[in-house]
Length: 404
Image (cartoon, rainbow, N blue to C red; front, side, top):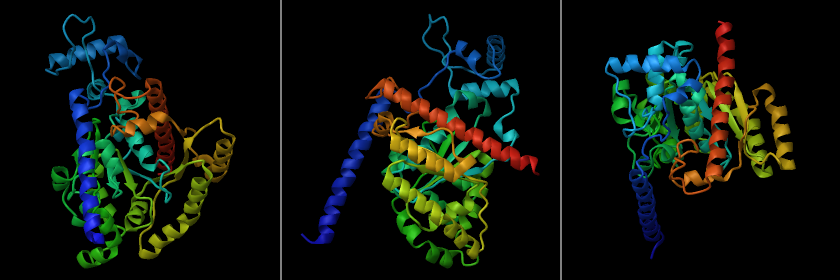
């Protein structure tokens, strides 16, 4: 058997196995009706949310129902039958006239989570950040709209949000959207996909994007000769969709290519995951050391980077380990005030949820095949990470706003 034939055989077997695994997960989710975000709120529990009291909730729900709004309820006989989604709660806040995040700042703030070292929890951070920003109790009133742009050919972010897209030959990928320069209506119709988390959408990635990235300059020279190849992402995609979303989260592969440079050019904020293991920590330092060279490459091409800060945060950390503490101390010296005060620890829950194509936030404890306490710890860490990031961003944007 020649080399090409052997590779094709292995490829076919791998594709079959991937489809089998995905079908099993999808089937399990359908069996337990776990396609959408599982968490529901009782009417009484809303009194613990910001700007809501028991009386306010009672009055608002009654008014909404009188106007024809239908809330989901559990079986009859329950003294508190309401089973409210995060969408219901956002609508309750809207009915109350509570200002949303987009009334305070311009929409379309681009967050690029980047590191040239693989295996640093870059994608895990991004997808948990997306879900945490949307579903955190203290942020429900903001009704945040989030778009994930997956530019990593491995399509891991896509897998966490729409597992069926992650194994398909995706023609409507983020890279294709950038190159085609479509209208917002065309992007909504063919490229932007819903996820199981209300308020979080995704434009998926495809394995073919790796070939697009490697030939990016040649493709742009052929089809967009009058434009800077690193400005197309901003011009052809970000500018089209930014009015629809409060945050746009970008994920690329852990390698230097035109898609990473394009993401740097489009970013309003960088985030750098920092694992404490020595080889990963050293690789992260090398990335940070090289970052000015990458930015200068953009400047030399005619694109001026515009991000307001680069936030560092620890991942895969075990707080009790001495060497991990030392790595965190060194990271603080590097990032100073831009170091996030919350870390993503090394927890079994983060690894196990990936087996079911979920995040620590989207995984339903009732159907989670693992330690419930481990999942709860990972979920809490994810929410704390998301809220700390939100507060840090709010600080930056408030300062920029005050400076005019």
